[in-house]
Image 1: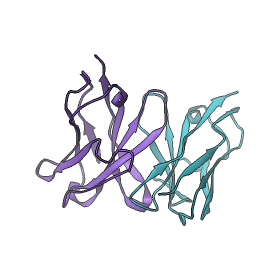
Image 2: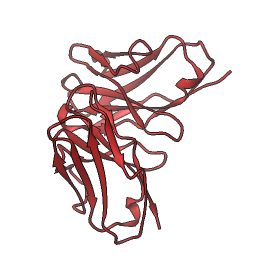
Image 3: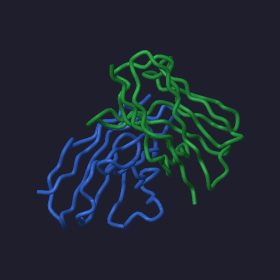
Image 4: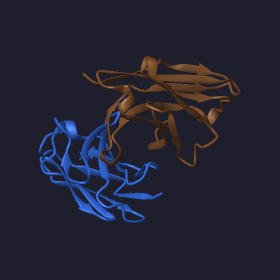
Length: 118
Length: 107
């Protein structure tokens, strides 16, 4: 059974750093892209970027380029989303998803809620 | 990257109704258009991929059509569990983009 399990909710202060994770199981992790999606409170879905764990090729949507870092450790089938200096506007639910390219994202993590508040 | 525009942004309908949601791309995306359903507090769920293909396990009352720039999602007979928010997504390029969503509410 394909599963993506994300790390738990986080509460951080502005300026702090954070790394959240997404662990894949039930499939060959290195053969599929992993995408990250932001959903701000009460808002729609925003595609942040993707990574191919096989070679760590990461690509970012323009709105998120330079704001976050996407990485992966294929030895433990885990992808990461990282911030070096959080802002209140980063408060959101973050989802990872297995991305099939042209055929969309077929499996999703349960989401990680990030709250940034002083 | 292609911008995606969904309409309507919200919709009220009754159980048993036939409902259509549209999605327009700012440039041709061939048939690389996917539809998702999201319920409150849950992750999105893939319903339709490549404009017309039904994802495994999704009820046949859901269908998709279109190519190029204009696409539709149709629910043939609304069921109580279908009240949710629906998003289109273009996957023509790796710079994937979503529509703004359509909230389907009970009339």
